[in-house]
Length: 188
Image (cartoon, rainbow, N blue to C red):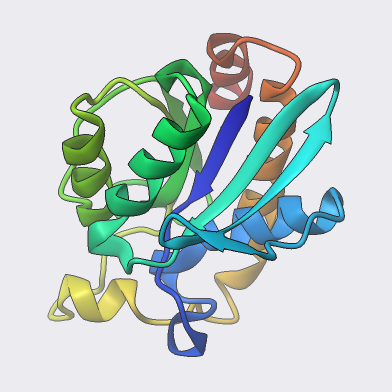
């Protein structure tokens, strides 16, 4: 069983904001697999789907970003999902808008959703897809920036990144994450 988590904030206020790009990927996978997130438990909305003979859970934590680990850890414990079968997708200020970086471990890099995830899992060693949103313009505070919506100019790059990220998730169902990481990091 694999768990794919997209980080974001719940509610219409945060829909299509930079901080919710992880939710966008889960929405894309949910649509591709006809797997609406109708289950509500573990402080999240999730769906269970069978793909390639394996059970996959798609999860959107509904705890708000800074408490994401409070949703991820209980679900992993309940279903006995090992760390190597977890993939977390989130926004990254240090990457150009629309770019992807896949990693098997790393620090939170100042991302509060990842800080919470690391704190609840007790390790930095888990698969992740970092999706670039770039840095805020001079004078704009980071919280205001990450909670702002993408501009019309940025949207095509974001849509492409969401598609690529969902493609990487699908490849992970057939290949070890290291192979997927090497393939997708090479094409960026």
